[in-house]
Length: 153
Image 1 (cartoon, rainbow, N blue to C red):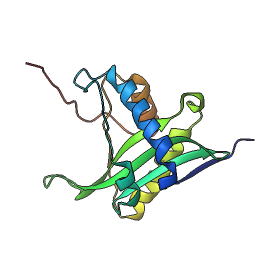
Image 2 (tube, one colour):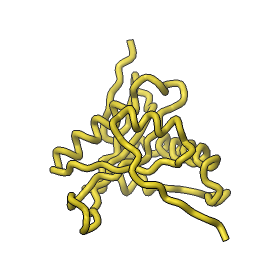
Image 3 (cartoon, helix red, strand yellow):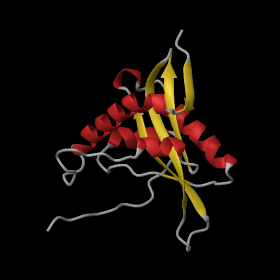
């Protein structure tokens, strides 16, 4: 029987986390024509592992890392009701494990971490055309909130 473990990422996880980052970037290229074609990196993963305001988690089955996600505490705009929020990102599950609730469990663990720091608002970004990701986040309780628009000149 598969045993899913959600745990804090360590430096030993960096090689697989770097692979996950590149897999995320490759998927997002189809949604974002502005991404550079080479040498793209979104995250300082080593720094995130040690950062006090970031919780970087991995999902593991039988010793194999199969997913990731992080929450980062941020100051909110002064005109909002909440002073701080948690920004979620680096949400990834290997294709063979998708649809098994892994992402839901990562989000639940990040939510517990967020609430334990007396923060009660979470935000994330998702590409408008990434309907699979939108469905997964809506299943976790997120709602569409704001649409960012762009135009190349």
